[in-house]
Image (cartoon, rainbow, N blue to C red; front, side):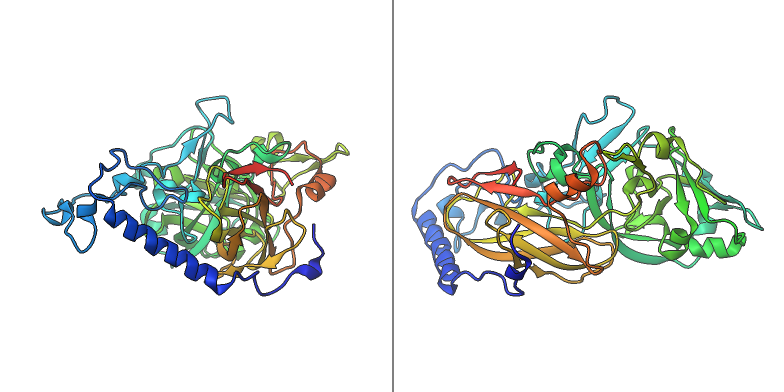
Length: 441
């Protein structure tokens, strides 16, 4: 890694003529396309490397100022729930075979095809231990009991009468990037970092309910249990429940999807995703951790010394470049805006540095606001690629000074026996032909 003193608050600036040249090249290409004459358009729509516009040769008659065919007929009158354009058919979640059973599933978010920081509901990553449960909200109940003076059973109607708030937070599976502990495996960002999503969540602060039931001062832990067939449950510190935990019933302005816990889930901002229990049916207060099957057989990390690290809740500071990234291609040398996402379970992102020489030197990227606590932050970095092979990386720092580690530093501290909480710097190699691949650097 380069000396920290190499860092600068000003990104490596490409000459202004580079951007002008790039714009000029685009204009020239459009002029050429207009002069080509009539050509057959590609019959099969295809996404470009960033998941945006469609790569097809335009027919000359369709180009401005001429009127293309779609301007000469009435558009479809849409009804029901809106759906994406068919030209975006490749922007979908993908499943993996990480768990050798049909009862447990993983669906990864296509981060490399998304913009900004919000994950659409239909693309939010999904992790289930016994499939997706469908629950009639009128039949669902939440029990709050244990070391409380007034146990309570709440219907959804009861719950939604409490004061509600909306907050934007990421959720990350503790197994996100688990394939990268021992070798560069993921073929793209979706497969390396796709167990990560960010949404606006609406719900009732848990402390509103705790205040209603009267928690015994001796109660420092709570058992959260879901209504799925696995009865997924975890021990939660009461201090976290009182801090920023939500009983969430809505996501991005609509009721939760079944795969996200409809009609009710616990949301624990910054904590590993499995603790944000879906289909929440019970909160039981107690004096000590409940040592459930999930937190003893799983979600515990073995150190090289043989000691185990348990109750490692917070997702550490992390980042990934989403463009250019593996399985994408830079078509030619010149201006390129490097962009990606950074996040920390501890709070806000303070800084993201980018390296275009395999970590020897670093320069600060621009952070796109708003920068919110325990939320994804989009970063951007202006760069001019000279056509030579390079390795690009990002390194994030949060407001408490936690810095994303190199893989070597992470392995030295924790070994490579774990499958959880991998937050090392991700490297992408760009070859002379512009192809990007996943590498260790």
